[in-house]
Length: 136
Image (cartoon, rainbow, N blue to C red; front, side):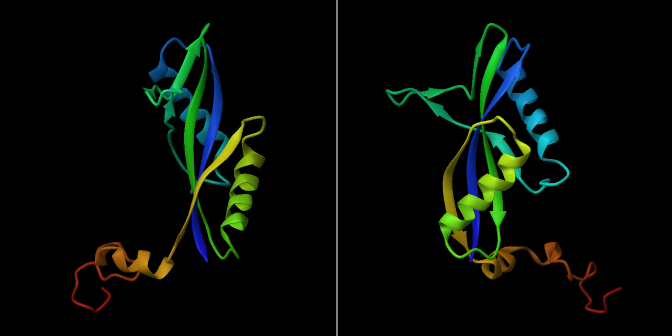
């Protein structure tokens, strides 16, 4: 079984003035910590909501410091069950993001063969560029 695992990270950022600046720095900082070992992990801004359900900015800035919510998506192959995929993702990401709180948001099973069929012909690894089938 193959799974996509979404993990939320709370990334601290220092010496920032705006939410946009904090988000840019947090994404850059996280990318540096994950690369080159986990360059396949997708990094995106997270979502935050107030207790009343109101949408909030992805970062909280106070006294030139920020806490930024990021979502990291990782694909885990050949696992026994969703819990196994969750543990693998937390371990792999957590080893590189030391002292950053992580929480698994979602684990979704997917069919690798179906995902490959959805790719356009030009995106498949063995696709012929000119389409005449001779491989040249």
